[in-house]
Image (tube, rainbow, N blue to C red; front, side, top):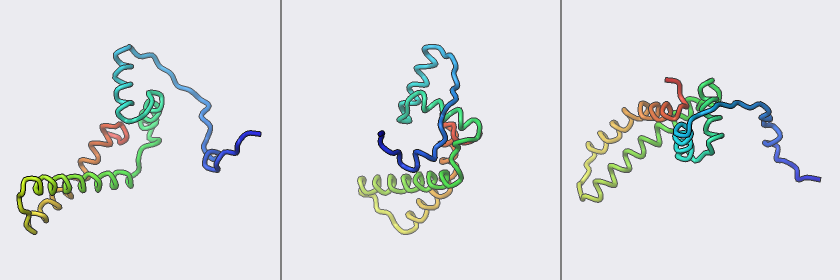
Length: 122
């Protein structure tokens, strides 16, 4: 007898249907490059892009909020590290401004990144 599948594997719907299309060599190379950049196979990347276009598999609002917070934190940390490396002091007012700037841009930046990945409607 075969090994039992974990419960989560049993609850996933089977993928029994297939979609196909023809592309040129250069189009395939471009798809391959983007897929590799996402850490995916061409097939899985295409699947995600197609499902995102239908509204399926699109990250919810929670994903956008999490990404926005990560991007804001990244901006703050990079600015702090740069100031430390250059020996530039940071007073309380400058720190407040840095946080306000990061907060002001975070949702826009997250939206742009998700849209660029085809995971958010334009």
